[in-house]
Image (cartoon, rainbow, N blue to C red):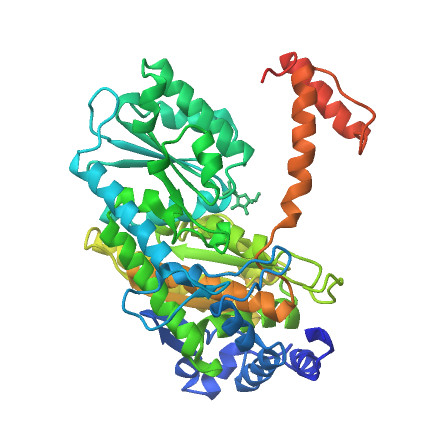
Amino acid sequence: MTITSSSAWLSLLEHADAMRDYRVAEAFQADPARADRFSLRAAGLFVDFSKQRINAETLARLLAVAEAADVLARRDAMAAGEPINCTEQRAVLHMALRNRAGSSRRYVTRGYDVASDVEAVQQQMARLCDDIHSGRWRGWRGDKITDVVNIGIGGSDLGPFMVTEALRRDAFPAIRAHFVSNVDGAHLQRVLSQCNPGSTLFVIVSKTFSTTETLMNARAAREWLLASGAKERDVCKHFVAVSAYLDAAREFGIDAANVFQFWDWVGGRFSLWSAVGLTIALATSMAVFRDLLAGAHAMDEHFLTAAPECNLPLLMALIGVWNRNGLGAESLCVAPYSQDLRRLPSYLQQLEMESNGKSVGIDGAPLEVATCPLIWGEPGTNGQHAFFQLLHQGTTVVPVDFIAVLANDGSYPDHQRALLANCFAQSEALMLGKTESQVRAELIEAGLDAAAVNSLAPHKIFAGNRPSTTILLPALTAHSIGALIALYEHKVFAQGVLWGVNSFDQWGVELGKQLARRIDLELAEGAISSVGKPAHDASTRNLMAAAIGATGSIKR
Ligand code: F6P
């Protein structure tokens, strides 16, 4: 049975109709306890849903939908290591990567407890961090490592990049971290121009070790090293790899001792907790990395044990479903009021859209329900001076997740206050809006004549009632960042169950990869094929001709 045919779903949609004119500002006036009623704390985070267009009845009906979709049973199946990634027959055990030593929880797949494998790789990571940080590890000219370049893309880049940026304050002072993902050579070139081949360590991260972008960048980095005078035997002093396919990494020429394993039960976009987070640990320390794991673990325990009505990831998932399917929102804006969290929206784009951007259910049948909204955003306050106009007065309603950090490191206290003031003001303005009578009164007060008031007033009205959630982190620590990311991971999982999709595969990225391989070959040969499967359409042929005309055949 799909969720759309359940009585809980039908009753939710009926309720959505009844709630079209529900005014959140009035609900606050009527219920002094509303803010507390719709706020929760978990794993050190405070989350306020009270500016969402919901009431107690909404939550009750959403929780009934969660029950009908069996979200908690699916959660338990995930924790029990069942192959819930049904199209690839894989378990989904990223929680095992952050299970605390001494915890009584066991993560087992195919009868095997993964704890000792996880611990062994964490120890291998700790040894490398120690070697690099102590200066024991030397480059081919005898130099200490000063620059670490993470080469990877998607889940092998976005998580480590986002977290390394966010943990700037915990940076190991003698190491600069860089990230290269794009197959555009400009990306690699820009990073290499800041590095010295004798003191640079490349961390090649690829779950499959077959991703074109990553392998091309890794090969070009190796050539750059060799061009500086290093010999083949020196490559092992400058390259380590992280992969689920150890042989492929070794075949690339990386010393077996420097290949860090992760497993098929870790999805790429859920992998920063594994050795995929090696650059995070190198850029900070293994202790900081373990704090990140601890924060995520605290959220895992909350998700696994809290009752549905106070289960934060579940409630966030349900509110997302409410906005998407009940109120028809097509996108979700993520606005971190923290420059150090500037990469969070990009990270969440992959986490949410690659996981739940699906249109068939786990049984392969087309879905009758709209799934993942578009995820987008920018840090505040920059976004306010760019797209917030649309959020306030545009014709489409966009729910917003505001994310703010209460304490900074003490520098620029006035900036910190202004940052928080802006964050809180935006959610307040989105909710309150401004009525025509308020606008008119202001214009009259400002001394405008009747004609000017009439012409200006419509432009200054804000409809208000625009939904948002605010998430507060006590400080930008590894622990709170871990908890925040795990919150979104579990939200995404729960939404996948609610919509009935497999959140852990990504077949939708394959066709473009296949066609790119073929087009790349033809561009290299300077010959465009009008046959083949499928034959190129006229538009694609024109574009290819333009590229060949511009560059001759594009050399491999
Ligand atoms: O193409 C999409 C994808 O498979 C993502 O799911 C993944 O995170 C990324 O490519 C990188 O894959 P890999 O780690 O295997 O290089």
